[in-house]
Length: 379
Image (cartoon, rainbow, N blue to C red):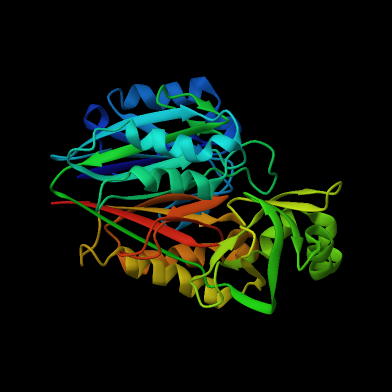
């Protein structure tokens, strides 16, 4: 397995970042970048000409990752040539968020199930119920096959996210997935947060899917604003700094949920994934050192299947982590590099949601505020 990486910026155009040249040999091309650049057909056509046989998957971001660098306003291209493995691609258009479960199911059903090793998926980050998407995919996955990936970002603007479809065009309301096949492939994954819960448990007394209306019979937005104080004026972006930890039972493993939108009229909060009635939520806050340690933990977990350094690591980290870490953001990527090794190609992006099991034997879920890593190796 070989990889080749390049970067496009408005100032410098396309720039090679590696010495390898695989061109026509590339079967897969990962593109992560600012939405307006991905929608520029001439830019994308330039890179498609270099890798004419590659299946393309990519999305808009809240920051691009390459090596140990975190960049904004760029496109990062990672081309992959497999020795014996092969892949398939399937993209679908989202009609409404109510279709999220069915879209996930149809996405997986569009692939040949025989010999399927893994699915990597990218979704629109705003026009989807991420937890329902994952549940739909999970409902028809063959035994032993997992899904990893993430939701596209749009900086901290929450206006439009785009995903590159199977025709190589970046559009909103798109979900695209790559299915990987091959006996020589080893796929690893890990997801970890590092946020701290505080305050008391609040019972979700009124919600519908991913829209939260009441906590402890009080309007959700009013209560949430009381937590945030002055930062409530900057919602929904400031909500990235104070996610919610959610559990179905008081002793169950929590997942993190981040706000996507607020509604002043009905005092509701819209999240990236479901907030079921009867669940318990707590406010969370960040500790910089714990976030960086969380990224390292995710990296160690992602190496467990292979016990060696992977050929490629795809890092999907939540935009909320980037806003908290600020100028220290590259330290979480450097922490991953120290674990996976210097010979591993690293790419990825900052997202509106991450898709992965926490660990090898866990079920796949939508996460927020985690560092989620997919590692790929080929014998």
